[in-house]
Image (spheres, one colour):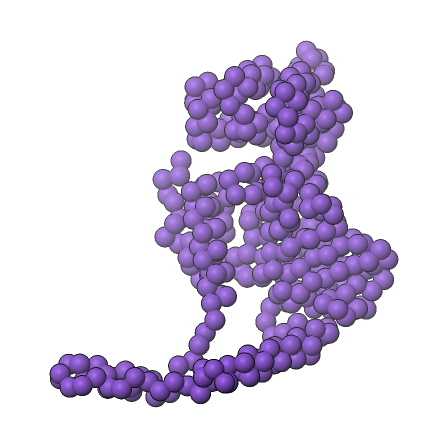
Amino acid sequence: MFSNHVTNELSAYCNGELSTERARDVAEHIMSCVRCRSRCEEIKLGAKLAEHVPLETAPADMWAKIESALEGQLTGNIPAPPLPRAWFWRPQFAAITVAVVAVILIGAWWVLRDRTTPPAGPSWQVATLNGRPTIGSTRITGQGQLGVGQWLETDQNSSAQINVASIGQVQVDPNTRIRLVQTQPTEHRLELARGQMSARIWAPPRLFFVDTPSAVAADLGCAYTLVVDDSGGSLLRVTSGWVALELKDRESIVPAGAACQTRPGIGPGTPYFEDAGPDFLNALADLDFQPNKPAKSRALNQLLQRARVKDTLTLWHLLARVDGEERRRVFEKMTSLIELPTDVTRDGILKLDQEMLTKWKDKLEFYWVGSSVDPKSIKDLKTADPKKF
């Protein structure tokens, strides 16, 4: 399925060197390919680390001295004398040098901290909706510009709207702290430290990301609301399209009408449809975040008893999060609700064969989104057992 990997193009993709059409193709491939997505994240991490490596300027005459030393070694002459020790590295001047640098840095911060416009470089337009939000430490009225690295904050009486480059909008609700992390042709990224934001994005998958203390929300072309509480946990609610919640190797795919919680140190929980019953939702919360194993076992029993056809969204994600007998029970519950595709096997699913899991997910999506389901078959299923819907 993933024979045509895009690893050779990932460096160009991450640096914005691909054409718009090819960048979208690569983005869509990364969305469904774990291998290429992992490699892409490694490249991005390396690039971010490189950005923090300081650049040092060598003395103008250093290369001439190096050449002289090399020529002396080649001719057998006595090597050139060592480079003289620069005055600013002598002990008596070291403390003065450090103090001067510190004063310069503090002065630069003091001058720049109240700037209402970002430094030269990319920025996003911010429009005030209510009150007076702040960018940096300066309150804005009307409109302002949010530069990379800057924080936008709202108090209990203010709210704002951010234009996400040319691909969408984000509404920032009261008591929210949010930062522009990056904006490039192949990636736009915010950080939501606390509060609530609502996003409407009209772009190819995986161009817009939101970092939270407990997961990363990757837009797949959608509208959604994201809330981060004081503990760093978050709640995602999707109103159209799809969103992926990710942390390391843990991923939850959330469609319209569904939600997903996250917790610091754990990452994304299991997605669920919000119209599920309270018993189902309570059991899922225990299964995701309760550390007690007996409590988890009881929660799984309750969950399987209450699961409907559309709750195969939750069960499909659980397949990779439980093992042994529990995985077998989840599989049997799923197949009692929806049959396996003809080219997917029981053994393949229990062994978490990625290709088979994806094929089954493709079939299950019809029941999750409802747009491609035969109305007659849905009517027949409801008549047979209304509780399944």
